[in-house]
Image (cartoon, rainbow, N blue to C red):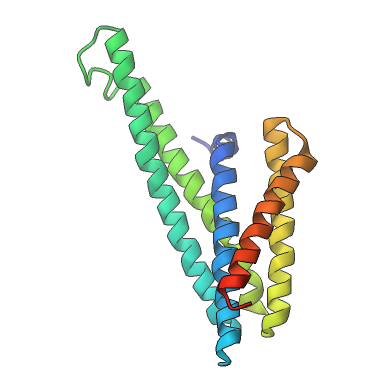
Length: 191
């Protein structure tokens, strides 16, 4: 598979691009904002980069969880489909193993694993970047919120285009989810 084919297949797995990105942005935004609130509430001078690294560690965990979850789930689905096909073709179980059908299924499994995990990992950088480069906690928090909502709007537009639904409606739905998570994180962080 050449690079062009790889990227085409990557973006054809739009549900995993969307799910992974959304998980990375929203989960890490929650972790980062809660860590920031707790650090501020505790009154201690915790450097922002530590808050950013805390969020990033959550991003790495969710990326790995999503990647392996996709692997396990997709493998189960693909193998079930192959076994059903064997049954319909009146073949013994396992006869399609090591065939072109099996190789294509394995490729889909690994591509879904990579797409979901990688999208989660990339999405997790949106909420932590400000904390890694800005020393003032309040400024970093505001910049994080702005970056997250811009990313959520872009993700909403992407999903709207993929689903051929209203770009505005899809963006608003995703931003509302982001606001809900922000409020929960704010309350949990001592806000």
